[in-house]
Length: 171
Length: 222
Picture (cartoon, helix red, strand yellow):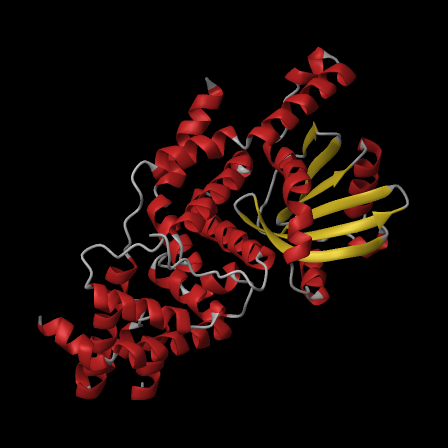
């Protein structure tokens, strides 16, 4: 009974971040199947350490940190010749209600970002974390994270074009 | 407040711009336009990143996460049986401290990978942690063979592996995780103690209770 209660609590608490975790994993790995594996492994690790979690307020950052580390491990294991991008076999998911052409532009723009910059941007946009929180999660300095975020947005602006954003707003 | 400051803040985190900068934007048409465009792009970015989550994925992932991989479950079962035979059936009912138990799980499942993935740690950071916790420096117990940080127990811990005369000992130093009482656990052939320290706590994991107790008393002598 105690186990079931603990399990239900885990599913309830961690489940609140499930969609965000999946999207973070998806945009890191850029492949649906890899994303599913990443979320699976993240939650398995979280469950193994669940009893020790004291601060429920830290749960979200904790889960994202585990996922970030799982992804880093996966990247380290990938052979140099193996393609990380899952463009084939239907592994790419279009965004909900998105313009497909714009989706492709965004995908291209995100791919152009250095890994560390893309990760910081995803943590902020999908996870809603502050620069300081991201710095802790990525074991970096707040200044370095700020620089990565600024560069990421500069690249996106150049690729997506501020003029197109204006059109988007008018439409 | 200047235009440059506003633009820097908007490009770094457009959702968290402080009030003084927002007030500047109210009075500066160029900055207002810049901020507006940045936020529009942010909204579009959010929409584009909003990929659908596969149906039934949540239920499957949670079920498998809790059940664990088949091989691990078999291993856990075998380890449990061996432990029961060694220590007697009454031992199975002993209550382990959850954080100490998590320390053992960390050493079994995470430690090797954490060491492989780690970036070089700054020894000065450990010095600050040791000073804050008011414990003895780990290098006094033996040779510190690894030093890093890792997610543990819902926060970040300073992870130290020491080679002592009595074998390998793992320390997880948690300067922000205060604790009133000592907790202990025994599992998978390892012993763990979580000891309270000034303003935080330290988990000590080793392969014998004697090693753990020895390190604990030395830490407290710091």
